[in-house]
Length: 460
Image 1: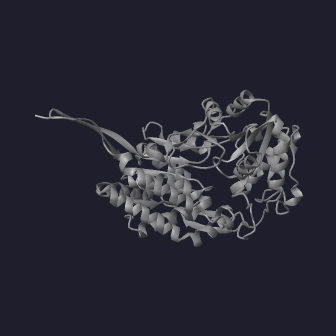
Image 2 (image 1 turned 135 degrees about the horizontal axis):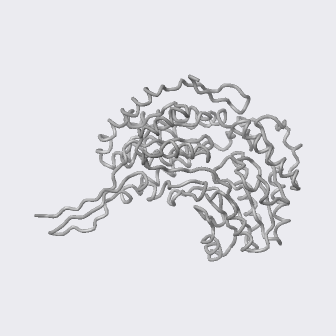
Image 3 (image 1 turned 180 degrees about the horizontal axis):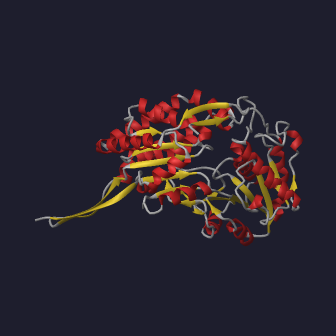
């Protein structure tokens, strides 16, 4: 294959096509980045921050073009307005903490010795970004990597083919040197070869567990540091002392928003037994009110899945669960856009589920959620931890001490209380188990995108 094609989930047409770089052309681009990086790192931190902020602002100015592009490429309805609000929040926060996060750690400054630890940029950072939140997931690494003095090479998912191109255009138009931030159109084989050759100094990958394994295999023996954000099967737990309406609204939105294609989306919900029936009734009413259809139409609340194969996987999980005794509560007849074969998938709520079913165990990544009653905190904790993944958990209670005590026993990266499906740039975005390793954003994100260098200076 000599080109990459974005097939639109709206109608199956080819929305965008770009030629692939040859391996040698990719190597040359990376070497340009390596040659340009020292001068970029030598700029004052305040100047790098200014240029990154300007790049984000230029990207925001393109939002009227970006929103319909996203609808065409991956199916998100235009009514939600794109991703710039989150991009701006993350860039602004990371820019604001950069000076403190990157300052030297001074151990001693005396007449006899200077001892300190400095943070130095890795060099060339590769960002391999996914399609589901194509700007937000990329900016998590792009912005702090550039601010810290790295050059960045961005390889974006084929499903969102134009995103990397547009991001780089915005930042370069704002003044970031073209060699310092580059978008490369690469296939998997070339990407893996470049990693195996040790061409990068840090690699951040966001995507599937299988993709993460491929990156790890390619990097084996190169000692290149990796950040991996992979799968998720995030739980919610509703306790008796909570605002039930708020819990339904937030957890169901967390399960269904973006057609369920969220790394930290809610994929399984556990409800304390006395509230179970009321929660389910309210949840079904909310989901039954959605409109599935063309994401370019302003009244559409659910667009298509990004690819037909994603819809087919969700259909298979639901069918297997129903065959094993689960009940599907949402009337598919309310969603005529779902013909049972294409990328348009009706949302679904399942009850009478258990952890023997794939829909409660495997990543579904679709507008489908299973809901189970639980007797107490102990059962809820056991079920929440009964997963190969560990990204976030959403706890619903009015007792912060109870939430903290439960959270301490959960094998997850983030514990939410009374909210879900949110990435706070002040906190480390990290995961456990098959969700991956490393951490993005916060001061820890800056530390992962730099390396420590120690100075032990004995004065004469």
